[in-house]
Every structure is written in structure tokens, then in C-alpha cells.
Image (tube, rainbow, N blue to C red; front, side, top):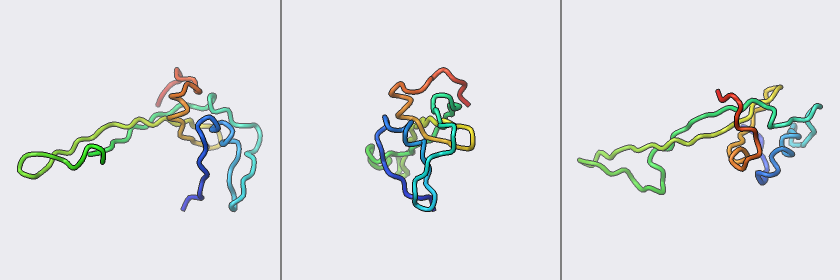
Length: 102
């Protein structure tokens, strides 16, 4: 099971990735520090089918129709295996958006 993480505001993301947790204690990452805007920008598309806010599926003969919506998530993959979801951070204009998406 993954260790618990503390929630923090989007603006604190660049600072939050500078530490790691081992044995329930926060320690600084080994130098050099992580600069998220220099890490590779990655994109993943997930699908949310029949989201709760739209209610139960409706359809002919009681079978229901499944409706799915795409949910785009953005990540930064840095050296040393660090991968961080940056969707909100990117949308607030903090990252460079013109990098090669994969």
C-alpha cells in the first residue's frame, strides 16, 4: 500500500516534489533539485462512464446506454523515475506547454 500523502495547493507543487517520504519521515531529494518545467510532459486519457452527476443510464428496453467522457491528465516525468501529475498546475500556466507530448 502506498504511504499517505498530505494535500497541498497547486501553487506548492514545485516545492512539494523536493521532498520524499521514507519510513514515515520526509527527507529532501538528492541534489540537484527537481525543476518540473524541465521534465518531459506526458499525457494520459482516462474515461469516466456514466458520471454520477448525470444520473443512471437511460435507454430502450431497460438496457441503458453507457456514455463515456474523456478525462485528460497531464504528468511530468523527471530523471530518476519521479513522475508527478501536473494537470491543474499545467492549466494554471506554470509549465511549458509546447513540449513533445507522448
